[in-house]
Length: 242
Length: 239
Image (tube, rainbow over all chains, first blue to last red; front, side):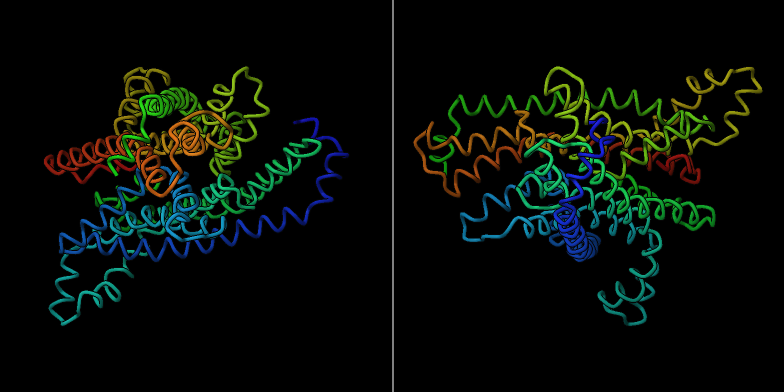
């Protein structure tokens, strides 16, 4: 593998097919963005739900989070891809990737959001209620804006995990970056070095800036001594995020 | 449904699937133990060596934390210089997981106040003695919940190995599905798929849910304890 990375010949063969890789990288990017959107929507929805006072709603949210967090993403992707066609839903590999990754990380983001909401003192909700805010209005205008700052670091962490987990598409045969790399490397002359090196670098330049920014932001918050660290709930958010 | 289940899970198939589950547990235990060892070394280097070794450990951690696990599985499955597929895949997971665990341990080390070192030095402890007797015990106590979450991640991620034909639970489930018509004479329909995937899901769920209940139990106990003592919930808790 090392000698392949050093050999000009294998790089030439690899670069001749650069368009395939660019397209696959585009797929990975698109899946990441769309899955992130889905995960954020589901996460905020179920996160708010798990802090409601209605036990049924709380139960539903808990069930969602526990089921999704405790079974592998690969299994969920297989269920989408292999089981759903039997009941009449045919979806392509890329869409399966978006749904599976989005729903899976939605559960993690729900936990982050829940911890964020619980770190806001309860008095805020009571004060809002006393001023005639409805539940949704309280969440939208008072509680959620305050949580953004606290939940941003664990959320960034989740985004990095989400990008890495889009590689699950490779297991169901979609043409994302991971699968394209593996396919290209294992067919023909079996040139492993260059494609995997480039694949690694591409994932790295997606994840590393995000992760670094998230960590710096967290340290800045800590230095400013914002009340993120002295509430057990905020800690839990980081625990479940990492 | 009952009839489908009893026809699908013949003793042979059941044993085959449970064998896969056992392989998942075996893999996870080996991976976690090895990764704890290497992760500890990496974390100590990154935290306390400010020169070349610390830099290397830092670069290693960043590289492995920002690339997908699956990529390392695919690379190591073909190129790691180890005799069996099982060992090569374990190797890939250890590479990846030790970086993740190193970051967790580093978080724990950062949370130990500097004063602890100074106090230990003033009592004549050497650096290694301080680490072994004073810093590491506190560090590990603080990070146990986060470490357990990482164990859950490892258990789930072993399912990536179904891509490289290591016969763990996920691979065997798919295998059973494709061979079902030949062995039991059933055509594969939604019931059979649901039964097999449901069985795999239940096994994963039982393993992981037990672990995550343990995480919550430890966290709650600690929250109750720190509250009882009336301390400001120690900044040390931050993993």
